[in-house]
Length: 473
Image (tube, rainbow, N blue to C red; front, side, top):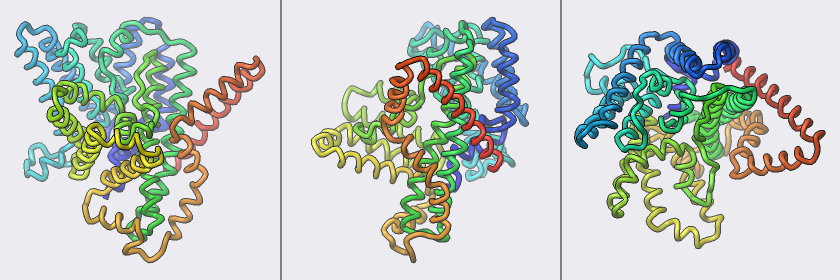
């Protein structure tokens, strides 16, 4: 059973480096970094400070990881030059292939180290976990850079200093977003930091912090009570898995908001990692919207080249599904999870979407929600017998009562926050609220001032509440 999600394990129990939610980062590292960055207006100075602070961020407690990161940046720099400027096509392809091999090997050695233990290869087995919290997104960034150079989407970077800024920036090291070099190449060389940047960046960062520490942990508490096999009940099985979905949603979106806020504070504008949930697009929309930049990356290199016929398209989607599943976790259930969503995307593309479009919308909504619900269960349970035990409990099989005392207490204790979380997850809700606030603020200056003051007060309250929650974890 996945008692701690892969994301939560990486974020809450990082084995090297700071975390965005660490109070030492929020009240020490970040303010000092912002202050130092403002000492000089030049972009070169800002890049130097970003490199130095990034090294401190993800090598906090494990300085030797720095050598690993710097060495792979140099190799990706050389592979990019070969992939982009090689005279022969085979030579450019070789540069891209070498980057894939190097970065994939790096990811396997550090993230899939249990594989070597199972195979009895003691030389590559770590006595203690030393996984850098940044390695997953770091390696995929290297592959995307060289791949884009190979596909002629970007010109290979000749200034290794600029590539270094892109590769080791701590802004998108934890859960993304997936940033392609072409998206920020100009910003690396030319950007400014204004008072508006500080305001917008801090607001985005604090909102993300509150999502993680308030809503994410609230759903976590309900999930732990509901999916406790010592007293599993029908109510706990249903609500516990729904809480697990909420927990993952707010961990992902919260940390991504924090990352985007950090980017804004440093003058960068990154692409949004999540798009609004659109149930009308069924599972395909959920899959792409939940982490669209990662999906787009795999689509770009595996699905788009295979669109000549249905067989090649299906092959590309299946391979992408498997790789995305294994990228999130090297285990049987994540492999199944990747295949599960890949098959649903294929089926919807081939015929199911046309059928659902002709039926009442409620049927499509029910299908989508149940498919996501079962997908969450596949991710949560690592053993088939645990999954089957939970599935039977959904219908009251093998249980003695509807809900446990602990489940009832946890649900009631966090009910208000859970309701807020569900409302936030409702498609289009945020847009409605924003539009109404905008209409109210534009009526007169008094309304505008009231909105600004209210926003500031709310942000301050969220920071205090999230800090308090962080202390109790």
